[in-house]
Length: 318
Image (cartoon, rainbow, N blue to C red; front, side, top):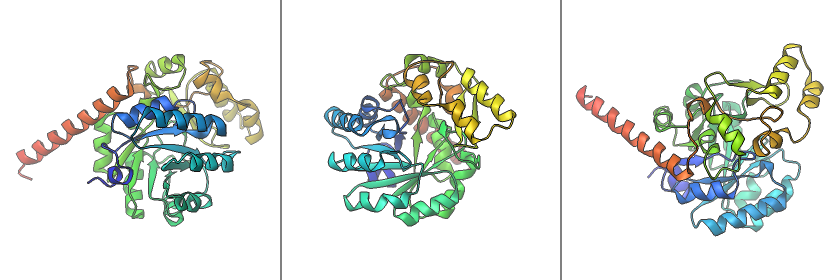
């Protein structure tokens, strides 16, 4: 049995990423009900808002689901307490030191997965005792690795580095990309952007429409002097690009970013002044559809591709 399907007790080795302002209980429960692993993104939620989303998700699905927790979250202890109190069984941690909370979570019987973008932090996560890692390549939306290592290079390096299961992320929005990730050694895939445009995603309709209208080159990694983030082009992203070209320091970039700019764009629908976090794969996304349809299409394309390669090997007498 696939190690990730066994670890989470899910049907398909497909995980929906915990995306800020996009992945509430509706999306998480829809993905879980479709056989994948749905994830509630706690990064945009106050503790009691997260509690409500967890409770609603438990009412909407009897399948496993998880919560993504950025470890640099200002109310991290309260978030952890909510997750434990509500009986969440799976936590994906990111943006911080996994050693800080992994032990506490595992003592409560919670399966822990940590998101990394390089071999150094993959080893740190393994040493911290996590059950699996998400190796996220440069193509991914949102916050990203400073090394700018692409998924096709990152996955083999991580597989050679750790002994725990590896979930590939970054640029994966189709069955073909999933098949490529498995060929590189991944045990599962984590998919963000493709689920950001699901009907159940909490992203603003204007953001979803801008994503499916994106073309090649419409995203760019920005703000490396703060925390690298991949942004969809708009007036705010252009302003950041100009500021960085002029040598803006951290304080200037923080002033430009301000507060709640991601909410302004992705959740409230200001397509010019908001921060629009999305991956390079947005150029391949052309339709808003239910999460189940997205997952089913990815899985069917994965199986079809696998059959095609098996036929090719047979024809070559391999």
